[in-house]
Image (cartoon, rainbow, N blue to C red):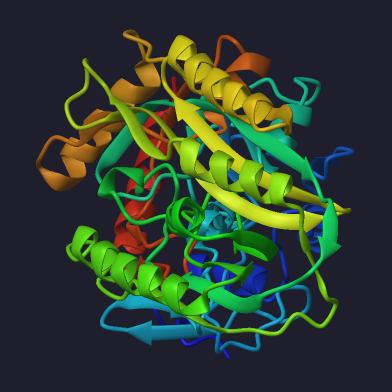
Length: 481
C-alpha cells in the first residue's frame, strides 16, 4: 500500500509508487522499460524503445501550444541498489518499501530510487493528464545512467526533434544546473597468482562509513574504505611479512566505498594487531568530524583453501592501493566552492581470476581529467597491472546564451519571490551526452530536494516534490514560444 496515496501531488506520488514496485537497478531495466512502453500504448501515445531500452514517448501540444517548439523532458529509469547489512531486500525481485518520517520519504533500509524515479513520475503525470497546458513533448527516459550513462551513449537523434531540454535529475530545489563534469571509469586488473599458505590468518575490516555519491558528496571529504584499507596494508607490509589471501571493497563506481576487507597471512599476528589498533585510533582522529562511526578491526580468520597470493602480487596490489590518489584533486578557479577534478576508488573485487579495481574520475576540465587518468595508468603499469579506460563521457559546458535557463529563472522568481541559484555540478549528467547527440539543444537541470542518494539513507523531501511539481507546470506553460 502506498502511504502517500493521499499526499499532494497525488498523481506524482501514485506514479512514483507504481514504478517503485518494479525492480530497476542499473542493468536490470527490461521490466521498467516495457512498463513505460505499455503506459504509452495504453494512451495511444507515440512511443519508441531502442536496443539500449531507452524509451521516448511523444505527446502533442495542448490547445494554443500545437505549434510551439517541442520540449524534451528527460530523466533515467535505473537506480543505484544499496542496502543495509541487516536488510534481506532482493533488488532483482522485491518492490521498494516506503517509509514516511518527518516529512521525508525513505525506503526500508535500501536506496529509495528518488534518483531518478521522481523524474519518471513527473513525466508520467504530465503524459497522463488531460488538463495541463504544455508544448509538444518528447519524454526521454534513459537506461544505465548510474553505471556509466550507457543509455545516453547509445541514443541517436532519430526520434528526437526537441530544441529545449528539461533534465530532471538534480537534487536541490531552487538550484538550476547549467553545466556538469565529464568523466571516465578506469579499470585496473591484476592476474591472481597463488602459492601454499602459511602463517596465521587475520581479517582486517574497514566499516561504518557514510559513503555517498562520489560526485556530489566528494567535497565532504568522507573516508573511502578502499583507500583506508590500502593504507593499513601498506603500513603492515612496511613492518611485517604479509600475503593477501582475499580482498574486497566497495560496491559501485559512483558511490564512495563504505566497506572493505582483506584476509591476510602473517607471521607475527600480535604485531599486526598492534599496528591495526594504532591505525584505528589514527583514522578515528582524522575522520571524527565526518565519519564518526568509522571502524577498523582485525580478527582471527580461517583459510579453508590453504592458499595465498604470491609475495610479488601482494606487494603490487598494496603498492597500487597506497599509491593512487583519491578524492578532491582540484577546485574550480571560476565557480567558488565547486570541485573541478576528483576521483573515487569505487570497487575492489575478485572476478574471473583477477583482482579488479574500478575508479571513477570526474572533471569539468578535459585536460585535468586526462592528467588523473594518466596518473592511474602510470601507477597501474608500475605495479604490473592491466589498465583500461571505459565509459568516458563529455562535460556539459556552460552556455552564456540560454533562453531555457532564462525562462526557468523567471518562472522560479514569480513563484517564490526570490532568485534561484545558477551553478554547475561536479557529477556527470546526461546533458553532456545529449548535447553531443543534439548539439543545438538548450538545456537546464533541476529537481526536488534529495538527500544521501546512493545510500540506504536516501530520502526525498515530500513538500519539495510538490513545490517542484508546481514549478514544472508553470514552466511548461511558459515555454509556449
